[in-house]
Each structure stands twice: as C-alpha cells, then as structure tokens.
Image (cartoon, rainbow, N blue to C red; front, top):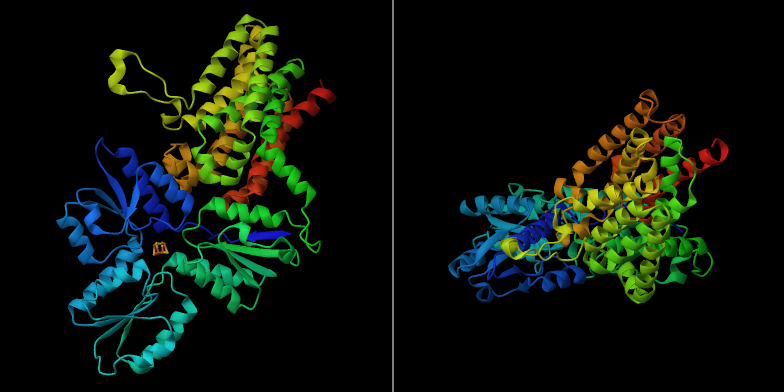
Length: 580
Ligand code: SF4
C-alpha cells in the first residue's frame, strides 16, 4: 500500500512549546521543589507516563497545587483559576499558547466594553473553559449553526470567536447565520493558522487518495474535526488512536491512503501507523509485504546500521590509496553494532518515546542483543590485537567510552560537588561522539601502523568519514527529535531547534563536498575523490527536496539516511575491486 503523510500531521507549535517548558522545568528543578501540570499536558499515555516517572503528576484541583511549581498547558486557564493558584502560593510556568492568549485578549477587551461573547467550540474543552473565564459572565458556547437562532435577539453588543481548533467550514456557517441575526455583531475568526493549514491539507489530500486515516485521541476535539472534514469529502475515513485500531483486511481494499493527525499526536504513533499500512499488500486480504517485514527486521536488529559502518573503511582505503582490508570492515561493524545495541539498554528512554514498538522488540530480545554485543566486542578486540597492541589498546579505550556513555561516572571525593555525571549529559555529546568514534574505528585504528608514512592522507580520510557520519547522525537526530527532547537529551538538533537543522545539514554537506574537492588538489587523496564528489552531489541533489519540506519520522527517511553511508561505502568497495 502506498501512503501519503500530511506535512502538517503531529504536534502543533503550542503543544511543542508546552512540552519544552515542562522539560526545561524538570531539568532546572531544585532539590525539594515539587512540579505538576494543571490538567493533562497532552493526550498521550506514553508521554504522561514518562512525566510521572520524572515525578511530574497531573493535578486538576487548585488546592493540590499549593506551594508547587505548576505548568499551565497550551489550552490556558480561566483568570479566576489563575488568581486562585497565585493565592495558594503556586509558581506558575505559563505554557499557554500565544495564539490562545491572543483570543483571551480579544474576549477580555470586548467584555470590558459590555459585549456578550459567543464562542463556537466544545463547551467541555479546556481551552473553551479558559475562554469563558474572560467573558465576565456574558459568554455562551455553541457548536451548531442552528443554535444561533436560540440566542437572545436583544443583545446589542455581541462578539463571535472560535475555539482555535474549530472546523473552518462549520465556523463559516455559524458566522453567516450570526451576521444575519446580528448585522452589527463583531466576528473574529480565531481559528489558528496551524489548524487552518492542517484542515486545508486534509481537504487537499482527500482529493488524491482512496481513504484517509486520522491519528489521534478519540476524545481529542481537533482530531475528531479532522476526521469529520475527511468524511465530508466523501471518502472512507478511519479515526484511530494507534495502528491496533486498524483492520488489515479492511485496509487491503485500498492502494493509496492519506494520513493526518491531531495537534497532540506524537510522531512515533504516526510512524507506527505508517509502517503498519505500508506493510499491507493491497488486494490480498491484508497479507504482509514480505520485503517490508525484512526491512523492518534489518533496521530493528541494527544490521543496516552495522552494514553502513562495515563499508566505511572502503571509503578511507579508496581515498587514501591504502590496501583493501576486510578485517577492518568486520572490526568497524562489530564495534558499531555492539555500542549501538548496548546503549539501547543503558539509555532506552528516548527509544521508548520515539518508537515504543522498537523498544518492546529490544526488550523481548534482550539476552540475544546483549550476548551478541559482547561477542561482537570480543571479535573486534581480537581483530585489533592482530594489528598490534597499540590498535588493541586504542579500541579498548573507545569501547570503554562507548559503554560509559550512558552510565553515571563516579567522581573523586574532591569533585563531589559536581555530582556523578554521564557523558551523554554533555550537550551535543551524542551528535559528535558517534562520528568521532566511527571515524576512528573505520579509518585510524586499522592503519595505525601506517600513520607515520601517510599521516596526511589518513587524517584527511578521517575528516571525510567524520563529516559523512556527522551528517547521518544529525539527520537521524532530527528524526528522533521528539523523544530526545522529552528525555532531556541535548543533541545538536535539540539545542538549535528543528528549524535550524536543515541549514546546518546543508552547510555541513557543502563543507563535505568542498573537503572532497580539495583532497586531490592538495595531494591528500587519489582520483576516487572525484568519483565520490560526483556521487555525493547527486545524492545531495536528490535529498534537497526532502530537507526543504522537512524530514518526516518515517521508514523512508531513515532508509535514505542510511543509504547515504552504505552507498558511499559500496562506491569505495567497487573502486578498490575495479581500480585497486
Ligand atoms: S492548535 Fe494552534 S492555538 Fe491551539 S495550541 Fe496548537 S498552535 Fe496553539
């Protein structure tokens, strides 16, 4: 089955900001300080469970927030509750979305001038309850155009606003009826831009696909509206919370399906729905696509990642004109596989949030993965020992650093005030440690004995492989952004934000291209650099639209990122075999 995922699917700005405010508060929390959220931060069980694990509980009663740090979620709260929380000594961390706050201001300004306010929205929704608080008791909520007829005709000053996630068509109908009844009434379309784009994209997608799947809480108002819009377009629509709500046989009737999601649906849930649908062979009673299962298995078991690492030494050997070495490939693959697999168990929080299915897979195969990782380390160390004691010791250091990455390091007594720390807590450590380690194992370690003879060429090859793996890591960090952000892992993408990642990746790719170009000019590499530059330019050109539109957290994006490393390695291998 072919799947088109809406560009606007997933967290909106307000929800992202609320999560960021909460995570920052967790990191800055001092000993003895208590932190809670006023109402559920978002409608997602995994995220709420993660917050609970970090001691951040949801509270709905102001009395239970007394003296605590309290996060106000994106929906905002009525001013009366805000005052009550202040009176009780709560410290408010206000994550009210700026677009919701703007509506508060509009209602407040009109209420002061004795206006009645009509809100087109769901009366029970937290945002609408907050909006009602600003109407000074002259507010009414409606959700159907006919309800305009029931409003008192003698209201002279009257304002109509919308819940920020209201269905645009419905609001238009309410507005038309409202202006017929109250020609002097004031209408403010307060549906937020993010909602507008999301709904417009669903309408557009419906004209291109056979069926729509809308992902998000069954009680989430904005998700329900998206499903309603898709149904109005006249195509079969499935509103699901997870892929478990979809029937494989039923979905097999469709060859092309569109997917969108509500404003508080995390990427990993959308990703799992995409994976599920892509695995269906259309017209075959929901049979699995065999190649999809194989690809999933290879990705989950880290074999694709290890294959990329295994091929990297060929890039260095082709660039620096060094002899071909298969044992270097085995050493690089074993190291990358072992460190990656072990760190999943030592630092599994982000995976649990980014991809719970994958986390469950690793949990099920824990013994197999830890056992094979230990064997892989032993094999890599054996290969290193064959190359000499210095290579062996260098690999031992890299293995220790790799294993210690997520383990608390106990500091000597005189540094106790710094408390135990983990290497992973150093900002951007994940982004840079992987490329440094991979480049060392794939390029320097196998050729330590040649270092004095060809130091310039080896360091040049190290730099190229480092940049190549750095671009890969940045792109994968981009895909894992939400989970990393939630567990407080400060990758470069988390530090600079998603929006600035694309220019950084473009800049690094330019630096990589330039570095490949100057290699032959400075005599640091052979003619392979020219071939690599041509292939790299082609790949970068191909990836350009993907970066411009924004990478999606899906299997295709992940496969394309890994293909960049595997492709470079295969090119190096072909060069060594054909040219030598
Ligand atoms: S839907 Fe719009 S207004 Fe509502 S929280 Fe998200 S960005 Fe803010």
